[in-house]
Length: 260
Image (cartoon, rainbow, N blue to C red; front, side, top):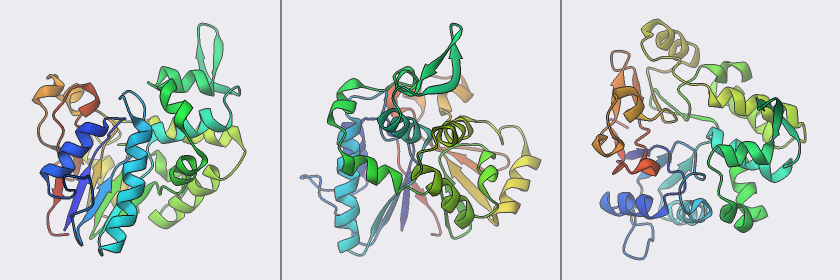
């Protein structure tokens, strides 16, 4: 059995509530999902109150789930790249200009909702965990990724190739390559209203359907975050958006991947 959750953005208590409600963790926040697999689609920090707490919970659950024969799988989001940029290259200038000057990576992170209390608590083990996150995964023909973007194709034409090339960036000191990666993962809406583009991307990746986060559902539907209680299917069901905006006051949800 596979469950998938979209952007968490530092909402530790909301994450705990959803995982307990699905029976994946218990009263003490311990893994109780047995052989179930949980997939997280990236963006673990920023905007919400406890991004480091989210990382620490997922790191522990990863170990506990593996011991029980299950798995906690966490993918890479654009905010996870921004946080690492701010950690490694805080004073380097990004490609983003505001008010006639280019922002530093630290300023970019703050602009994206970075929380200084998270930065103060960051330890090398948290950064090392983020650097191990794959960008893409595929489960029984379903492609899982953070961004609703085809910019992943800049790094290859298969899950394995893309993951390997992005991992190379995450272990490099080439801050310009980091900047390009964040910019590409920040792109969105590649498949919204474009069935042909979705079909082309899925065909290139050898998948039949894709699940993503990144673009809030409420912004697409023109409703309040509190009204978002289920995924948004579009492109004739080929694409499923799971960005519930729990960080914006939405109740959040966990998606069960049927047939997997």
